[in-house]
Image (cartoon, rainbow, N blue to C red):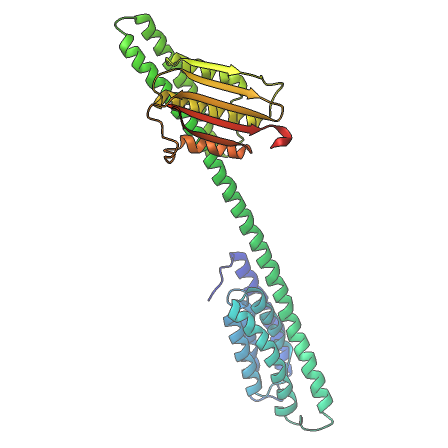
Length: 386
């Protein structure tokens, strides 16, 4: 029933209600000579209207009820409309601006019913006035119209404020949803990068560790070289993971990302793991492709070579990279091993991640078995072709 208000709002409403009571009470006491129980009725009337004024924002429904109680009290003591009735306008405004749906419509009904009640009371119940008199009828109609206009105007102002409040809340909710969507997309991107970095680096480390273990006795120098490769790969992976975690914690920019200039280092890591890697780049890149395309090419090749290292049958792995004016094509061919067949659903995040990167870049990617080999084909548009 009560709306949450800030402390200063509560203080303002109480102070305003107190000042209103201090101004209204003297006026009502002066005009109470003709009313029954003049001083008592004036005090209760001002008190009820001041309470309604203080509650108008905290509980519009309760404020409306108290205002109606004050109006009924006023009519019961046959008091003429006076200064205290000004609080009714503020209460009607609050019902439209801050009330629930029911209170909103109750405020509108009160505006219409209140105008009728005021007219009937002034011209039918107060002593010396007869609404049935033809001479008083035009005045009664004018009062009805004026009362309906005045009460309805304040209710309408509250409805306009309500619309503005709802529009602001909708904008805030939309911004929050957009921010959440952007954050979710960023988390997905970081998770995909984390998978690429960790999966590739661990595959190289495992292959080098196995090679070092077998070569330790026969070729200590090979074991030392393998351990050095493990150390370099692990340090590089750790730096990439720290960068990604920093982005995740602080929502900072993407930072430096791999480019096609880093492909040679990637090829070297794969070759150092004992893979017979054959790379053919024809035609070569005519210039500097867009950064997003370079990142996509790097990540797709990284994941494809990681899969070849982890699931391949141990034969030669072929990489064909062709930079055309409007697109770049990627082909990675390796003996199938235990890679998923063409008609099997993709397992894990590797193939899904590659397809997502290709789609985000505006291209396509297909992966599956072909003639005993596992083949990854991708085509990414460059420039206007995207």
